[in-house]
Image (cartoon, rainbow over all chains, first blue to last red; front, side, top):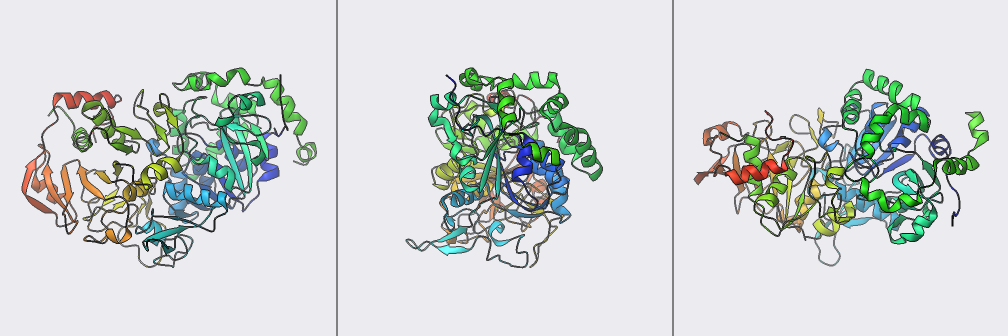
Length: 340
Length: 261
C-alpha cells in the first residue's frame, strides 16, 4: 500500500526561486569533488542569476567550480579546492588568483567539525587539527591579522592544559543536498559515503533535497536505520535525475570522465565559461532538455556502472515518473511561475 | 631499467607499510603505493579513504577521487568524513598515512595550498598559483601515528621554507611540533623520485638516507633547495623485484606510473 506522508516535491526552478537569494550563505552536499553533489541546483542558480554567494563547500565540486567561474561567488570556505584525479579546479582557481573570490581554507575534518558544531548549536568545537599550520595562522577573511586571531583561536584544554583550536560553527542559510533516494516527504537514503551530509542537514537553517530517484515512503519504513536525513528536517524535495552529472552518484550512475575534463577545461577561461553556460546550463532548465543534453547513450553507459547493484534493494519502491510528476505538479507555484 | 622513477617511488613508499596496519590513502600516487603494499607484502592492511569508505579495493583503474565508484563498488562500510578523519584518524587510531606535496621543506612541512613565490608577508593576499588546499592531509599529518610524504624531487619543490604550511611536519624543527601535543608523531620519511629522506632524531631536519639505483647523491643535492645533509651511511635502495613490479602493475592497471613524466 502506498504510504505517502506530506508531499514536498517541487520543480527545481521553484526551489531556487523560493529558497535561494543573492548574498546567502549557501552550502551544497555532499560537496564531494568527483562524487555526490547537488550540481543541478548550482546550474539553476546560474540560470536565475543568483550571486554574491558565500559558499560553504566541505570540498570543491564542479558546482563550486562553475559558480566561481561565472562570478556568482564572493566568499568561500572549503576543506579542499581541487578536483582530485581531474586536477585543479580551473574556474575556482582563476577566481581565487584574481582576488574575485575570497577563499578561507580549512582542512576536511575542520569543515566537518564546524558543521557538527553548527548542528549541535555549540559556540565552538575544539580540535587539534589545523593548529600550528598556516591554515590556522592565515585568514583570507581577516588578511591583516598575522597570525590570525579570529579564525581558529587557540584555547587551552581546561583539563590537560594543552593547546586546542576553537572552530567556529557553520549554519548556512540554505543547504541543497544531493541524495540518490528520497521520498516525497523528504526522507533520504544515501548510497556511498555520506561525507558530511548528516551534519550539514542539521546545521543548515533550511534544507532542500535534490534526488536522483523518488521512492515510496514504504521504502523508508523498510530501511529506517538507513534514513540519515529524516523528513522533519527538509523543506522541499526536487526530483532531478543525474543531479551530480558529470560527477558520480554511487549506485545510480558513474562519473562522466569526458565531460568532467571538458567542463573543467572550459571553466578555465571567461570565454570558455560563457560557452559552457550557453551550451550546457541555459538550455537545460527542464529535466527533459537536461537529459537530452547528456545524451541517451551516455546515460545508458553511466547507469550500468560497477556500483549499479547498490540500487537493487530499492528498485521495487521507485515511483513511476508519471506519479512523481503529478506530485510535483500539485505543489508547483503557479503564480511564481507566471511572474517568472 | 625495466621500471620508471615513479614506480620506484611508489614501491619505496609501499615498503614502509607494515602488514596489519590501519592506513589512510589519498587519491593518486599514495593510493597506488598503499594498494601495492597490500598486493605485495601487507595483505592484512586495513585501508580506508578520507571519505569513510572501508573494506574496498579499487577496480577498473585508479579511482578519480576518494569516493569514486571505482573504490565504492566493493566496500563493506560507508560512513563519513567525520568518522574517517575524526574517529579513526584524529583519535590516534590510524597507524600510517600518505600525503603528497607541491612544496616540502627541510623540516618536512608540506604546502599544497598555493605558490606565492616566497614569504607571504604580513598581509595575506591571493597566491600567484592556487593549488588544492589541505584536504584531509592536515588531519592526517597531525593524527596518524606516522606518515609518509611523496614528492617529485625538484629544486622548486624541495625548498628551504614552504610558502605556506598546509600540513605540519616538524614546523621549526627540534621540539617545535611537540609543543602542540599532536596525537600523531610526524612524518617518518619523504620518499621522492630520487631517494629517501629521514628526519634527524633531535633536530628533526630531513637528511638523505638512501638514493635510488638510477640516481646519485650529487643529483639529489643539486635538486634540493636547502643544504641537504647526507647520512654517513648513505646507501642505494634495493631495486624493485619482479614480484614487486608485478604487484604494483596489478594495481596500476592504467599505467599511470609508466607514462613519461
